[in-house]
Image (tube, helix red, strand yellow):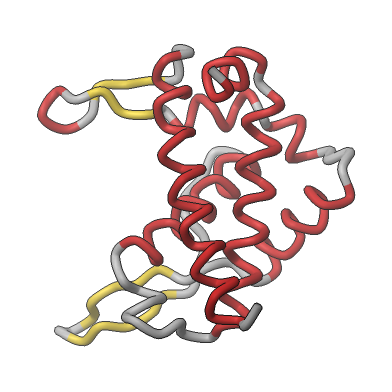
Length: 154
């Protein structure tokens, strides 16, 4: 399997996992009212539930994923003086788990909104690492909270 095919599959897997995660969060009580009164996943509240998992990961894969994301966090695409550019820096955050989940959502946003893919993958190895590690983090967090896990699997 060539790199582009595996990256495409990882991208699809991240989209699918995210789509399957937002509903279970809302269905299991991790919801809030978003813009225009729509139901929105409450990632901040969910982060509080997984704080212990993130602070003390038992799985070597999760530990590696957390270390990678914190050591090489995804950048945020911004416009500065009318020029599209990448901004380095962490999000304002109340906790380590919250910061990590913001980064995981940023990976998804960069992919979904075209920041990392325009028909060709930008920085393919880095993209692969970000996608793969984001999936590990997301899947471990889902499994950690019984109500979210149940809603995710049903």
